[in-house]
Image 1 (cartoon, rainbow, N blue to C red):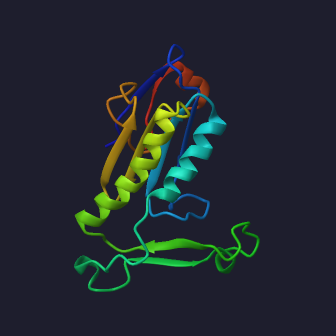
Image 2 (cartoon, helix red, strand yellow; image 1 turned 30 degrees about the horizontal axis):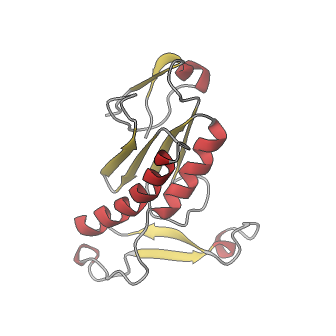
Length: 167
């Protein structure tokens, strides 16, 4: 069930963006979704992409028993997926097998550490990171009880203080 958030014009949020490996773009990280609340849409979009890329595991992480000993994260050069990709031969995530709780927490923490730096520098207000049903929030998310699902309203509606669900 989607949870709602309320953002009003009195709050320092005019931009909300979500990025992750399930979107229309290619991702370097394994986050299912990273939603960022920021002072501008451009800042939210850039931060969501950077944080989503940081939600990852070290390349030498052992395969989880839950994955049957198979490769946990599958990556391919971006140019093999999309010949026009500006990522060229950089490897992007194409699949993530079920991860152990330890690995989910490690990947989420990697993203949270990066997100915390952006919050501390005043570049973003709040961040919500989701990976395989587990989530972590960073920053001033007193704006809402929690985040989930997808943006259900346009930015003007959000600024007017109407409820919008985000994930």
